[in-house]
View 1: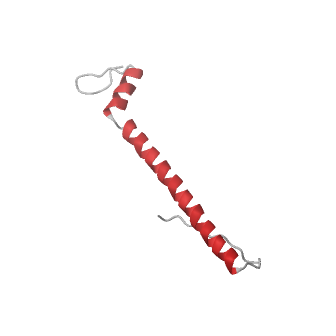
View 2: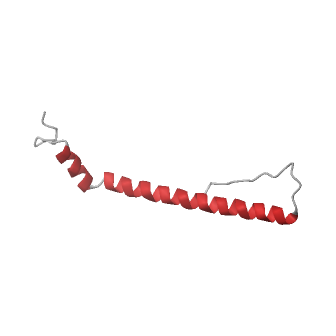
Length: 76
């Protein structure tokens, strides 16, 4: 939750109503940005879980046609 945004209207004559709208816009933008970041983190977490799963490891072994010796080393 370290994300932040600040809209700067310095140099413009803004009314109180416009300042309120700018604040609401800041809140909407940060809410959308946090939501998208959450989606990205969820997606990354799911992909990490898959890539480190037994299923993915077995798929990699099969796809690359690895053969292993009894001690676990790869047979060339």
